[in-house]
Length: 111
Length: 114
Image (cartoon, rainbow over all chains, first blue to last red; front, side, top):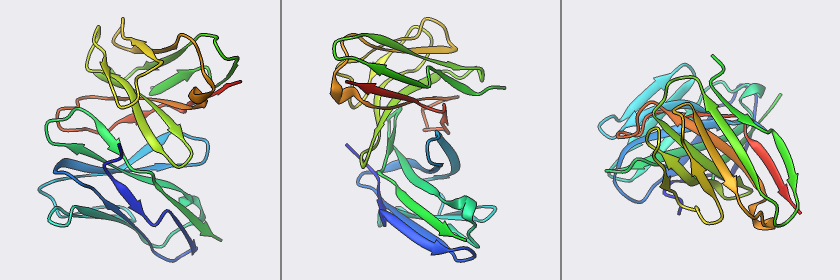
């Protein structure tokens, strides 16, 4: 069963705008990860945030984690057409060896 | 480094046929995983391995078997394919999983069962 659930399911924006995607989960976690999947390709790891961290940056990506609300957000600033992809959050529950993926947010960045 | 590779890239099977999907990684990772991805379902874990010679069941193991005879290879077998196994299969590996470290994915195998 899915642990993480992304919102919205689909998002369409113009190039240069910011894109925000949210992920909610149900049980306590060790860390939360975000992955990108371009059409027809495998998943690529973007960023990992641990349960004791609140915010993390990587280039144009900003991830926040609120463990009290069991939620995370991924912000992509100044989006580009090349950011068009599906974005998945994945969580590791305490004591588990397994990542559990959400169903993803499909982002379309229009030139 | 090639990273994680999968063979074949695409395959069509008839119901009842068998096949093996091969995953290879050159990063010396201990952990390897097999997922399936279906439209609207995200990724679901089929089986995984925490080291050479070990395997464990994931979320959707029925109808699949796996083997990890060598550290760098992880094989996924379908003994008697069914149309419900039509999917895209992804292999992944990670250096360690006790804290859920980053997973590296292969490009996927598209399987169509008629």
